[in-house]
Image (tube, rainbow, N blue to C red; front, side):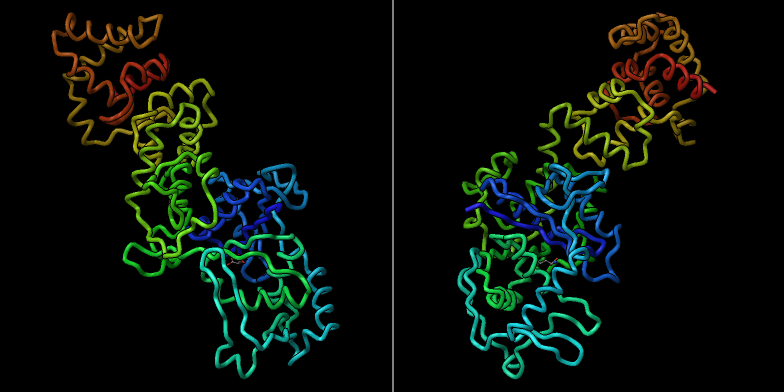
Length: 446
Ligand code: GLU
């Protein structure tokens, strides 16, 4: 079978971590089976849906690296992922829905009622064979016994979620609906609609919810509920992807850290766990540290640039060679990209900010006099490379000033970076280059 799955978010201005995981499981299943991953924006609720709300979802998926395979041609410069396709938008498919509502009415499966259109729901129980939850027999509730029919087009003419969701799954030939367990309660309606159209329903896989560490349901307001908070906090997408996989799926043998290629190879629906997953920020933290520690130079540079840009640094002002060299001195030294601004941000600012307490303790008249000697020695150097910068500093300290090098190293680092922690001093000086180094020393000396 040619697997076709979809992620069908409603743009609410927020990408919930549970939604991100649903997208990921669909994407993984598509990649595992060589199938197709469709992205469909369920934006029929006109009042709530803005392009901005949609962008939050698209940007989140891009950040995670979940590329979609299909959709109408788009000119969005930020980009489709494969070919020239953007997502499908339900707001652009109204004519298609209207046509099928007429079909249901003609068949006697739907009728007008107080301005709205209602679907004639079957009276018998619906059996759902879910790939994760197992077989579920859905009886009519007491209220439904009285009137099981439900609205598919509201009196204002807007088609309802159940209808458009099913019509699109039908039209897009979705073979597997992988979605949150909160939709299990809608599935009987959806299966009945498929039957009314004479189409075999897709296979369903309802994945367990994500709970807070205390076992309560994770709501929008809970800490860590929004994917954006991980982007803002500087987590590596590689770590977030790996972590999200573990929420409701297990690679067995107690394995936790797996490269994405291996996850794709192993991921399958029968291994999706039935019990709810609990959010564990410590595990994410650990994975993030591991990924960053082992990251190759290029990936580190690219993610580092993104993190610094988000923190407000004007990375575009610097040459690619400068950026690569600067990032190489930070690689392996930070635990999280959120820490990069404090560790290596000084490379990308033209002015080092020193607070008055630092000036009072580190730039005393005595220490400034020493720094001035070093400044002049550095000004003489034609070759501004780390080994020479080091021997120069040490000989200035020992021979000219007769002090321990540490007494010179500390204020130099403060003057150049504004911080006591940072990359190896001589390497960072080499990268800053002579112009910036002398300028920063001069600022500290005044
Ligand atoms: N728009 C629905 C949601 O965001 C989609 C449900 C589904 O995947 O079928 O919850």
